[in-house]
Image (cartoon, rainbow, N blue to C red; front, side, top):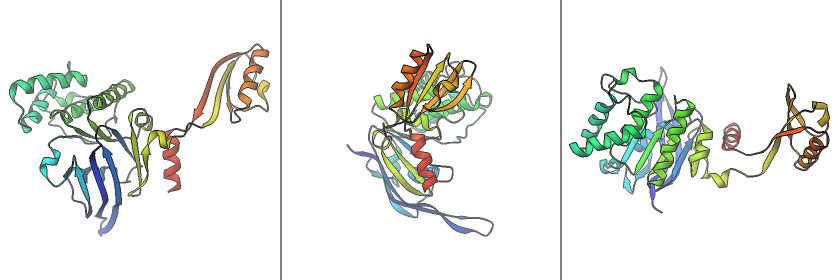
Length: 305
């Protein structure tokens, strides 16, 4: 499978401070994104995620390294013809409506009038802005502006979609809807490269991830390879029995009313606790094995680096 993005030994310095001193932001990063996959780019604030994206898009020039987009050097304007981009903090002409803004974007790509109208209607429906399509953007909430930004990133029907914090400012319903759209991209054969601080969302929709810390890629791979299925502990929620019933069997995390939440680190204790609940006429509310998550890996990687 060909690479939609290939980055090798990317380096970038900025001069920062009142008395400018060079600061190395990207320290020779190398990774690739395959065509048709959804790739998550993770890292703490200041790690170099947005700088990587700006280099990829030609907004800033790297000091060293090579970047290819869909098989072409990123310095060639044609490499970005099939690319859509949503920045972390997009700027909008706030006196325009969403429909007018998308029409303006479509004109930049030279899309014909008939096709333009059909495409804009389809995109407004996709991102859930049909009813607000003719409101000025200055009246939009942060989440609505994010939807409008996502729609403009799709105006040219790109093969590669680059999203910098696309879920920022979204309520839970909005996050789910945007996640569903990103999953749909994969079904359509599009490649998605995006950053997010919401690790649960990345774990739900990404095929592979890379973690950048201090300007270096410290971990990269498929989620199945990185996230272990080993059970770390089991949470048991019980009602109708006092906490002391389980003394010596596990850790009592909380006791509210007649409900007790236990944490069992010894897997062999699970059957013993379940049998005890049955024998004492208690009620088992929930039994939840807790496996390693992407958040566990991220926190461990960042704190160790």
